[in-house]
Length: 139
Image (cartoon, rainbow, N blue to C red; front, side, top):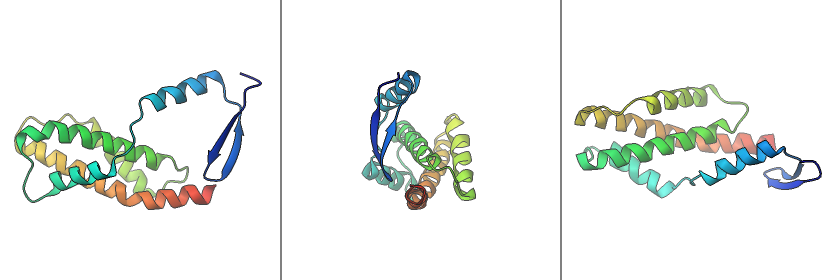
């Protein structure tokens, strides 16, 4: 793909890239499947799963799906830094473990797993300012 130049505006300013076709296809595929992080929905989901009153049984599937998506999004944001802190690395490992688990069949076991996903989501959200600071200092 020589001769094609892309100008990218990032945190550190403008950069010139001459990407390979396979790289562009991979990026395009990622962008097509990307959903932005909905902070309002995340906080609402956290309130639902971490409240002293457990969510109703008919809400469990949708809360589970949304929290798993959120955990993956937040883990990917945290992975954007080259120099990860130990705490972030541990959270990412916990995210991989929790997201690979099958949702338990029993109501209270499912609520327990949702609450673990909620605690993990909350911990990952707390790391966002640190990740942003690392990205800015690297630029």
